[in-house]
Structures are given as structure tokens and as C-alpha cells.
Image 1 (spheres, rainbow, N blue to C red):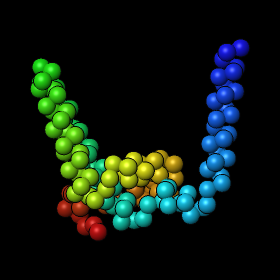
Image 2 (tube, rainbow, N blue to C red):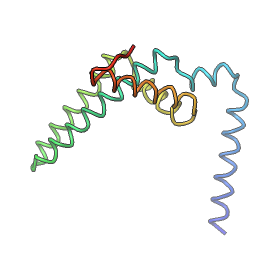
Image 3 (cartoon, rainbow, N blue to C red):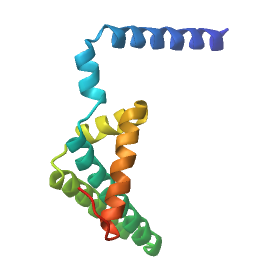
Length: 129
């Protein structure tokens, strides 16, 4: 009986959330879910730099065997990620919102994927924006 109640409560919460989203003006919904091309480019550059920084972090942490060294590596990673956001003129909130938009909107995802391909070409000597 408790499981049924939890499922019913979860379902009710989901319905209320969907109803609330439906009442938002279309402009408010699209502002949050559809970043423009320039913002997507900034996001993509930050995304690539984040992945590089995280890969380097994992390499460092794999070679460090003491907790203090691991903590220093974590602090350094957080500093690098914050610097990347500043460099790309994004806040953490904006980065998270664009991540969500890419996850929810196939058109935004397609634009993001296209930008990643262009950035990869530029990184390998090809032409890009």
C-alpha cells in the first residue's frame, strides 16, 4: 500500500510540474531552452575545455596516493573549471541551463553536435568559425 501511495504522489507531483510548465509563456520557455548560436559556441568551447581538465585531473589523481594530494588536485580542478567559465563568459547557472537545453531539445542538441564537429576540425587544422 505504501508503494502505491508513493507512486501516486510522484505521479501527482509530475502532473503539477507539467501543468506549471504549460502555463509559462512560450517566450519564457524558449528563452530557457534555446540558447542562440553564439551562446552554444561559448558553451561548446567550455565543454571541450572541461573535458580536457577533467581528463587531466583523473590522470593526476590516479598517480596520487595520499588524500592531501587528491584534495589539492580537486581544488585545482575546481579553479580550472571556474576559470574556463570566466574565459567563455558563462556562469555555472548558464552552463547548467544550456546542458539541460541540449538534453531536452533535439534541435539544440543537433546545433551543439555541429559546433563540436567544427571545433574538432579547427583543432586538427581544419577551418571553422
